[in-house]
Length: 378
View (cartoon, rainbow, N blue to C red):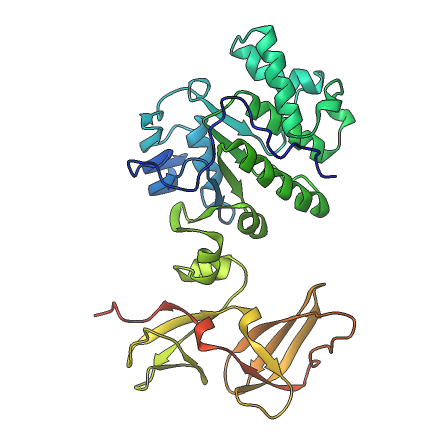
């Protein structure tokens, strides 16, 4: 149900998108030393977060990590305990929500059931006391942007979940916000519709060029939508980077295990700079002989073979088909259990060995992620 949107349509007066930093080095949105909490319990302690103009930034983390609190602090619905929030260099920390010039798309869309689609989109414009002609123009272009111009007279109950989500987007964009905040707007949709709406949401963002801050707990959403991802844990920023950076080069053990799946292993580095993790050895740059170290390797980077080949020998303890791949757990002889992801290559492919089969695991040293080399320890 892809929206019929024009590829060059852009809201009048909307900023053009750019992945570059601001000319003076400051971001479009700057968050500094921001703290917030509830009932005396601190849930957010963010030293600094800089959001570039025109970028799509996802705030990702587990439940209770502070991501929604962060969004509500920026929106003005939660008063921070300390710190500053700046948009275009202006401190908005203590401004009420209606004076911040920001847009918000809520998880439940918050549409007025008694109003038509057009009237829902026009609501924020009426609050701002825009003239009738300008309101009509903005409503028309916002509905064209999301491909719903033919649905202007309908009520929300007459729309699908995906269409309601697009109405909420149009309503927010019609006010031409400096920044658009999205609080898990796809979470109420089924899996198929969520995938479709990801494509539409990203396409809309690229057309209008508005800076978007997207809160989600869904890793696949964050990886597929974002220019950059801010990973939160316990109210703190664990890592900020592009999707490939946080996946391929996680900065911490938490990020490695939270983003996707990872085999995380600890051991001692031998004199030949090879890590011995419970009888399984790993080569990787930067390991310090004589020190304890922590490494990770993604399941899809582990190769599984059945036969007499070089590598770590083990036995299949578990095997499950997940649709596009097989998940296989291998108990290494005298060592740990490693998770392997074997891609399903089609009807003619050979299934991986079953439970109880003897197998051999191998990997490229370049795919080993060093989380703690031991180099910084005294």
